[in-house]
Image (cartoon, rainbow over all chains, first blue to last red; front, side):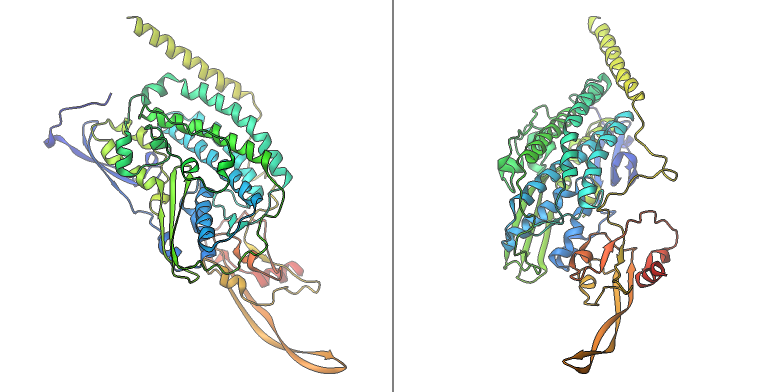
Length: 372
Length: 156
């Protein structure tokens, strides 16, 4: 159990976790000052895979940046491209057909489930259980197959276009998605029995890794991290975009502030995403997927535009400052994991290293998205 | 003391629930394939590297407008052309006209991000995605494709 301990500063040593370490889920380095097994101070060092996505957004035309956005987060890529197309569509005043909006919502939610599934497997593996990862990957594979049949790629999708979509979904996709929903509901019950009820799992997470609502507000944490701390904020509900007001879904909120609360939020979110997919497939209207007058050359009028979307990891914001040319003057991304990671330094002080790594896993980190 | 024994009981219970689930999974059919010997069917919209499409005479449909080259975010397509004079009959008179003919279509697949902008921007339907995914090599020269040459090899 972690708790207040008496630290003797002359007996501490420095431990480097990462940059290449299975516990860090990517190229992340955490410099930890340790007193035995307890963390005195932790310092996150970022920038090992910085790829200048923001600058690339400034010296390329708007359509040319499209594939970049899905490279930010390879697990929940569609949410990020969704933010980009919404921002540019609003800036340039492009109408989107209703069918395209519905397909976007369905595919984004499927991608969210895939992302949470992989997080679930990786998180349990962080705690020492390997089998749930295999089960989660098997379920995720169904989603990837569906999305591959529609978008043409498995992870780094480039599917949305300004004004609509690259191509339409076919009947096979709709049938596969309809068959997937009951299967996933059954799997969620299996995970509940296998992992959530497991006594070792609960003892590792309950009342450990506290992240309070106050700390979330201080560092700007969003998504499941904030919802696990009792903050009822979801961009889909609070600042609705696309066709989300049409759907009936709940935002799971837990007030325990521990690692288990964040786990529960994500498990409940998968269920809610399934509900959205179910309703989306029912309501899916016929019609075109691209507007009749889709502009080939996109030149948004000069101005400052901001669009936030709810991705699997939290609120993703994109700010475009346009000067009326075909390139953005300023292209700024606000990625959720960056804020979620920045509270780690404060939150893990005085914790045992194994608990701190479990807490790091519960933050759902994807490092390329921090070092964009 | 009671808490101690109840904890042992709870631990054993959750252990057997977990074992039961993994035991059930054991009898399910395998979902994996033995890759080099077995392969799965590629989806219709799979995006591999691009390939030129030929017309009826076996020549590339490409008219060297350069839209793919300009649309590519990574700049991995390079084209070259030469203008050829040819004669056409217009109202009974023979006239010489010039047209561009593709002489080089190189794809640098090492930097391609498979976004599909080139195929989308082509107004003449001259390029398509191939279904090749078994691309592995330790030499980067293997990923500089000469698509014109590949088209000729396909035809011969």
